Image 1 (spheres, rainbow, N blue to C red):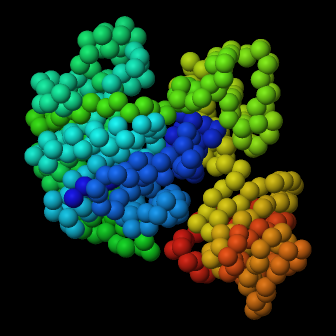
Image 2 (image 1 turned 30 degrees about the vertical axis):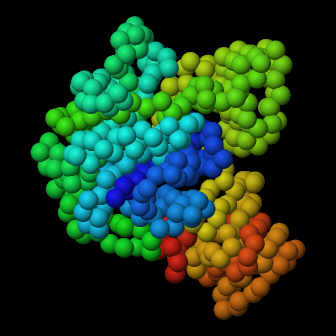
Length: 472
């Protein structure tokens, strides 16, 4: 059986400020109708496959579950990596889980943050590659280059198996411009897509040969795995013993059974803002804009507005990205340097490195509207049927005003039901809880006041999401 494995552990720092660690690019709509994770899952429609498996980190588990639910994939298996250990161990967790339930599982490994404009061509390539994969080949997908690209690694093809299938000769690192031009001219070098197709048992056998420490750690982690709501939690201590390695280095560069399926499907890894300019719909002057944007005498720019009007006059070859709390301006050909910006923000302990102004939680989201000396105003949006934890704060009081929907509130020993324009006050140290029992979203304005307003000022007594001492 063909089982898709969606790898959703990246942080997408090269698309800052839109992509941040708390909500990275795979959960954002970048080039498609839904998020990149949802578009990756939709791409499978038309293939005969079983429920998908998703490997992600613990912090993103509820976003993954909610986005899968939105595309009708509630039956997907979600495996939570205790820590990031790169792709080889992540795929091993999925292979062990698949083999335990489907001994003949054929794994289609897909990063959850890629863009494809021709999904039918992608599916056709998967079907072609499935034949040698069933016979024991470890297949990767090599994208036919459309330009001399220095930002991608390459795979070199060996002898032909069929017209579109080849033996894998080698993986090569990102080349310089001259080498990339030679690769394209020679015709047997293809972009390394990071997508794979192989039997679960064959991948595990190759790990046993070339990276036994990875396999041993993952076997122990899955042997000690626990079920938590709808998630599978491998044993953290065992998994942390695994070396961190990519599938390329751990297996594909060493196996004698590697193969390449060539792929022409409008593929991009959306690795930088310049990639969104390349795949976007440009105007007559080569500008790609998204949101409320007004341009004059501008050429070949990527301009994105998320919260307000952005205007630009007389600019060429720039990237301008506006969000509610940060603005990026830079040369389009230097966007790979954004990682340094994120590293600097992280070293300064700036929240913009990891959090958006709107922060998503399993019950919905909150957005900081005003922050002042000893007070803060937030907008809470609670999804229908969801409940915040029963909690108290040692240093702040809260005043809740219902804007829309119906709030069910526990306030000390009281239980209240409040509608629009109704409010309540939560003193310092009082147990409280907010829930939305209705069928429409609940919006609440929360005014906090006190000597300390940090998200770590919380004591939880009960939480339906199994969180402990984490921000609400």
